[in-house]
Length: 198
Image (tube, rainbow, N blue to C red; front, side, top):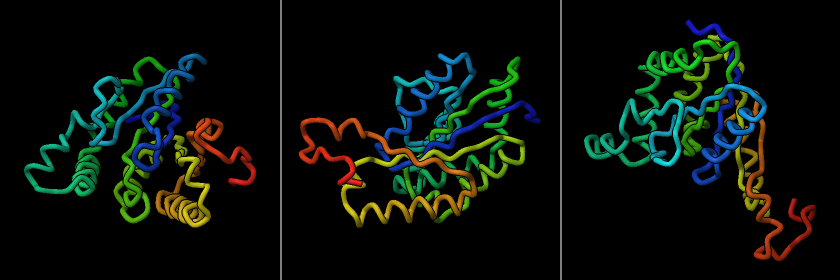
């Protein structure tokens, strides 16, 4: 039974939006503040060997085996792996419990897959998060969106709608962050008026 004070961020965004980088930079920031944190990789397709995750879903189930044995595509394999985790959530709870030993508060950064349909159309992620909120986890959704999507009006409206669908389906408070804004000021971007882009 997990009863410690746990604050968690559910980090989601499209593939390549910088979710893993955000998690590790946030973990470093928390460490600099003297806070205990752990990065949990719940993306079975995230095989970053140079990153050391506190808990890694890839140690429970191998996505490559699912692709080869069940002949699923990448998205179907990721959904299968998360459904498997949902049925074996005790594994993750035990890993978190081990991390909590001797600590009164911990920050958990959940690095989720980038497939948007997991958060807009399926209940697997919502069921996982409901289980954690029942155990008194204080959770916040963090959605990373590439700044360049805002340059196109249609894409910007689609981004707003998909983010709204995620908020409704997952039932958590959300924080939407623009990433890669530093590239706006690079020489590659001709329009330097930030307000005009927004």
